[in-house]
Length: 553
Ligand SMILES: NC(=O)c1ccc[n+]([C@@H]2O[C@H](COP(=O)([O-])OP(=O)(O)OC[C@H]3O[C@@H](n4cnc5c(N)ncnc54)[C@H](O)[C@@H]3O)[C@@H](O)[C@H]2O)c1
Image (cartoon, rainbow, N blue to C red; front, top):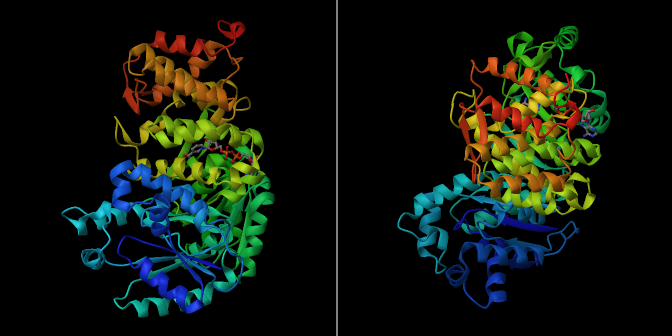
């Protein structure tokens, strides 16, 4: 077994790690020492020469050098990491899988005091206000540390910490890696979030325990049930939990009022009470409908989202928008109802059909265009492999990084503007590519394009409009276009009549009190404009339609 110690500078990773290794006659690896000896320089010197980026590159290489986790049940290696090593999702993927991770936690005052006495200079906390710097680092990194198998809140004496950690390792040793790999755990204003690979069973049981729910009512649909739900139900039952299930129809057919009524009646027949917890297992359509059911049954019961598609993991399960469609339009009836927890298990995506995976990347490109440069680069380098559903993209942690970056970006936007009240920024920016995207989707009767595919067309249109009004630099528009080309998104002209597309766009316009607010790309983010000339919109839409359908009705 490998034990990995993580935590802020000054939390005692090296000293605790060395002693722990000594007790087990295991080898001790201090990653910072390895980096220094490989570079032939001290860490402050590495920072001076190459900045933080130079140091992080060496750190990544040192982590890769560790090789695979030791499968033995006894402790063979103890690895102390630098405090920031876990910020990079790919480092966490390499470090956490199959290993027992221990978060050494402590109060910032105590850590700062230790650092003052330490002979090692920590460049990131070496300023005038070390306590403030540590507190700040702690807030930004908590979700990465909190993913650890063991959370050890520090006591002052080293041997006491070592004893406590040792006991807890012994208690978990048989399960190291068996419960999957948790990569991120966060407590946010829009619900608790756990993200990892193969974690659904364990994370769901933990979330249900935290809610002290009497019963888990799994709501799913045939596709997600076969891929994920059935196993999850058996897992919960195996843990002695009372489970019931309600199946809705697959796909958009779940998002109908009569379906919700039928499901509510099933809940009534099951005598579901407020103390029960509804668990939505499925993609965006299932999650929207089941979330709405949770929002209105008994005037609202608690629910947990277990998203099983890429769209749901990076978008729809996050943010509390629930609802159903009407014949007059999509998502016209609904409610804001935040899930108590969101359990994102990327393992579920391994069975997702290729078209669904590729389409969801339309939303991921949107998140990147909102201003996440690293996500942009990730999609440029590895997006085509993800779109093809390459298993190597899973195995290398690429899918995990994509889901984390795109999903977390949404968490931050929604947490800051839960009810979409901001007019110039906040949640409305998530509508980038959606005005015309929705219109194209509706023009196809919702049977033509998948949502993410439609968003990709919408992104091309928004870029063009942005260039014409002078807010989108042409290079930015070209970069977005090139990425969509590489992903195979929005590459063919659409067969819809222009008039139909514009009609659907007008419906959107009424919705926004007469003036449609356009979210347009800038050099590194977006702006919101409500003064876009309709003729320009028409030109942008026309450019995406097949020649034969531009005038036809
Ligand atoms: N609430 C929001 O904020 C929000 C945001 C974006 C999209 N949405 C909504 O999401 C819906 C689209 O979501 P979606 O693309 O996830 O569609 P979906 O829920 O219809 O799922 C797509 C298909 O994948 C199958 N499936 C699900 N999980 C699977 C798995 N693990 N393996 C194999 N197959 C699996 C389903 O059976 C279905 O056939 C739309 O209704 C859209 O309006 C909502």
